[in-house]
Image: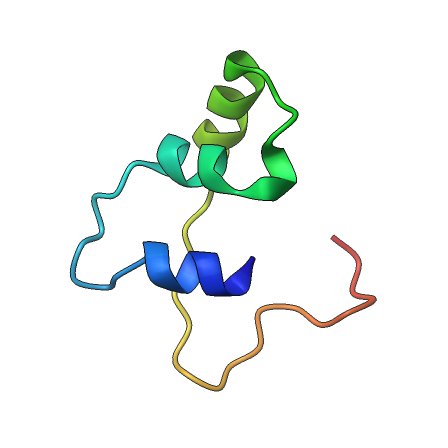
Amino acid sequence: MLELLRRWWKPSTPDRDPLALVASLPLFQGLDGAALRSLAEDLEWQSLPGGHVLFREGDHA
């Protein structure tokens, strides 16, 4: 999934459609349109410098 996000996200194009991103991820394939829209609306974009950790395995969500 990380590779898909890397291919999708380009720092020079911040206006990409969050709904298109969510709908393209295998993790969310079973969700209907309303659920995908709801998830996309709740996305919070984060940008970290290279080498920084967003989360580690076992971290609480």
